[in-house]
Length: 445
View (spheres, one colour):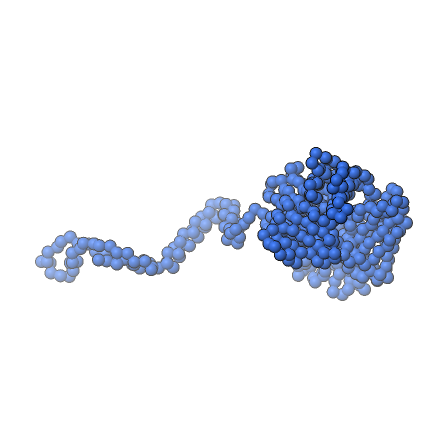
């Protein structure tokens, strides 16, 4: 009986043998058939070593014969090792999430009976409910880029949320009470859809549209206003199409009532994402300007430090002209919008909101800031340039996070709408100096 040992495994084999004949024995001893058995222990480390050597030889051969194939294979292996559970869509694309929160906002998950405080880590699924308090505002974005902004004292439920690569997307909410603004992106697939439901009324929201839905259970009515794009509202067999600056009032018991609304002013200056450099921002006036609206008799300007206007820092109500100057602003980022009011005291919806950055001018203007070039990647613009090591840069209102130790930088803007754009780059160095550059680009349709 012989024991064969390889690594930690032991096997047994039975061999019939005769006693080996020692060649040094006398020649007279009879010679007969015999079997000689030899074995060698092999460890796991040896096996793995030979396997790795074989793989290295194979990869070396591939590299010498076909370098391109080698790079492809190596990249695929790297991707699998670094992320063995790669999914076609990220978690952010598969869930709705909060992008703005202010005041009291609570969420009740579909499989829960408790309300919990919402935060930016909260992922929203179909059936989840969201509630805002009297001081609460929340902006929700879906995987397809659709956003719904909840105003105070609102209660909504996520009803649709589907976003897959190369497939039509769908998003939708149901409103129990309150006011919700919608903003729909330009869908790349015509079959994509977004909708809002209030009881038995549904509004199909058009691509690249904006508007507002107000559900008022006390007055037993719903209002839907379109500020841009289009929407189609339906309840049972009753159906109506809405164009920009049109409103439909939907009583619980009664037919649709369609009417026109006052258009919001078109903002002129400061331009969206533009920088304003002032020697002393606190006392330097900032001029706000907008285009006149037909039938409007006054305008109201609001300036806020938040995009949802939860912190108003300056107001100019009942302005009869189309321009006003504001002082007393500290350096920083600001948002502003304007509404119009007609002779019947009807107020327009809020139109576009612009953002600008107020920058204090440094004592020294000597600061290196050069733009080497721009390049388009679809609707995203890449800005490449050089500045001083340690300098801080802002491109179209966004901070540049990565400035190399030698001062070179590369920045990608957010997706831009088709048309001509002016990109503003402002910087400040450690000596208190500032500099600004502007480049113009055109995003093709």
